[in-house]
Length: 71
Image 1 (cartoon, rainbow, N blue to C red):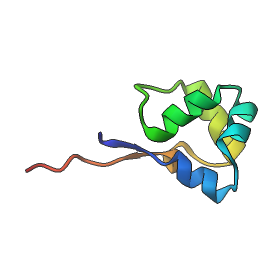
Image 2 (cartoon, rainbow, N blue to C red):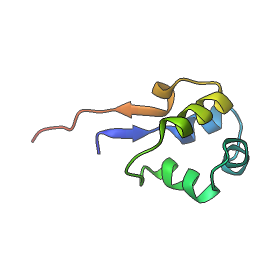
Image 3 (cartoon, rainbow, N blue to C red):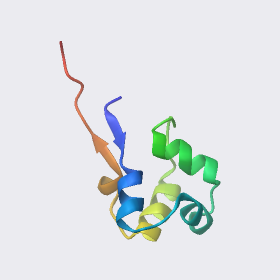
């Protein structure tokens, strides 16, 4: 998948656990886990905004595009 989710990196940098993030953002810990693993098909801008606000970061700190390698 060309979109990489770096939420784990930002959580580690902020020394924050998924549980605290989920409580402060207002979504379930299971949804945070799915987002961290990249197993979501989309994320609402409102949710991304809240995550960025809590982690004091930019969307580009969490989401990264990597071009697929061609054989």
